[in-house]
Length: 161
Image (cartoon, rainbow, N blue to C red; front, side):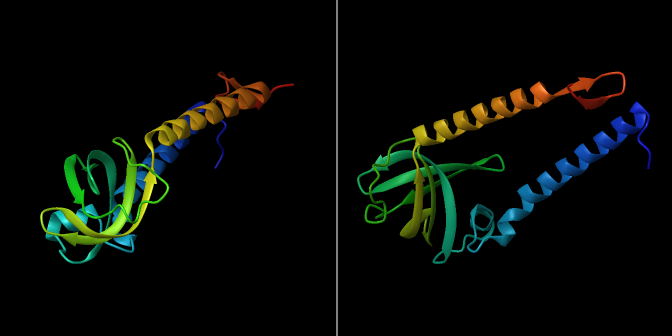
């Protein structure tokens, strides 16, 4: 297939973008089926009380040795209360806006009664991660722009001389 004309290049580019978007949407809807433990989809549909579940979200309230997290699951806000988690969280002071991912036993009324595993990312580390990603992207754009340029007549990238 020859891509000599700009119309063919544009149509192939649009087709590739549509395929990439389709794969991203498919992943977003199907990743929960391949988790080791059920997540929010199973909790909202059939509520597997007494089973081990995988949940996560942002810490909103802290009550002594328990805390509450919220997650926006496909447009629906889900709140989970976690009981007796102070023994699992080591070397970290939990604060609001921290990102939490945990595995635990689901109890009544959206409660995690026994936490087996927990991963906490504090808010400042999350913001620094986003900032580092932005800096890396800016650096890559600078390097790419230094060695390449876009030829608008042929609708292609050319190496700078």
